[in-house]
Image (cartoon, rainbow, N blue to C red):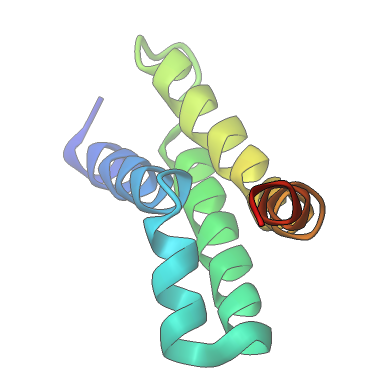
Amino acid sequence: MSIIPRIFLTLSFFLLFINGSALGFILYNERFNTLFGYGFFIFTCLVGAVFASIAEEPGSTKRFYCRYCFYGNLFVIVFPLYFHWVADSVFPVVIETLL
């Protein structure tokens, strides 16, 4: 694997780490408000998937890592829906039972 695909794979993994740990989602929403925060979060996830698809070389030994970063970045896109579902359904019930 040459140096350029390694750089793309490293960038894809970095974006997967930031967005997958919810740090990116929180920072984007705080910095850009709700609408642009969602848009920027989804954009960075898709950029990570594109970087992983660029890094994949046929017959390479790093194919597993390229696929992992590609599907991981695509899967992370649904995290905001999960966060809002928890915030709307679980937390109000917990607060009502505690009060």
